[in-house]
Length: 362
Ligand code: NDP
View 1 (tube, rainbow, N blue to C red):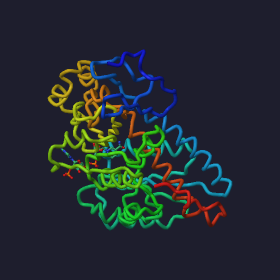
View 2: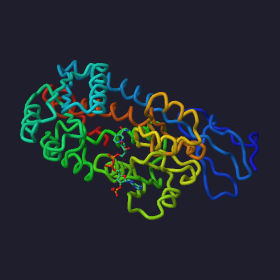
View 3: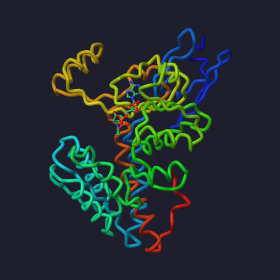
View 4: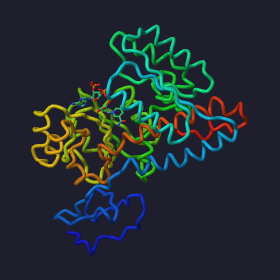
């Protein structure tokens, strides 16, 4: 129907072009690198891969400029990480966050209470960090041991230092559209959309997942960006049909490869938040039945990391984040951005630096 020679030319650049085809109700997003061949109904697309490293590097470059300005005003932002016990995944997460601080010249402190700590003791630890002036951000790595009241601990973090954005005050500010600290993963997803030129205004967005740390803030951010948002969860009926209406799909369920290619509308932008560690051989064999190279890699390593979206989605979507190498990298970048922002908001005025609230994005 549209041989490649008749495809309209597109300008190069990071933003996807939007193209309407005569006689078709739908319009498709594409850029010149993605049009592969034409089928009977029009061009078949291969998604633009939205690589987290590219956006992370942009954010770090911007943060370096801001950090220089803060240092000139006598402020070095500081982040404290509280790592309770010896959960191997948590140890890796905290190590990566501290490494990012070192990379940017942000002061960091790591506290490692034992797994037997009580709620009262941990609350006292956080209160101590609230009082330390050189600490701008406090991150309490979850999950916490079962004897600890995690909600009480997280609510002890001063909202001014709540760089994870988990405190009810932070969520309240987000709901009411006031500047504040926003949960890092959804904030990172918004940066991916913004920096890759995906239009949110008027777009139909579907968020799969309604957790306090990902799904809910994600939906609020998309709503503030003027998308029409549908929030889905485990009780949503006819989920694939709902997803098929979306221009922007955010998958945050923790369900390996659940979102099949035929759930997607051609050209949709797909943000895959899912981070699923596969360690069970039976599950790997089922999942990778048609992906011998993935199965082989699993057998060698004993584990695999997959998202919520099936890789075949890249043949239908207009743009898609990979797992690994997508949203996860932005989560740490936004933690750094929140730490710098917290320092500016709390200490910037006192040091005579310009107050940034008017320029603050969600
Ligand atoms: P939660 O388990 O807290 O929430 C999962 C959500 O998905 C719930 O709202 C649940 O619905 C919904 N859900 C589960 N199964 C289905 C289903 N079959 N159909 C529709 N909805 C379903 O997870 P999180 O929000 O904490 O995390 C979600 C994913 O994102 C995980 O894979 C996690 O590892 C990843 N993650 C990645 C980060 C990153 O940096 N890349 C950071 C944070 C999370 P209901 O409410 O009805 O139970």
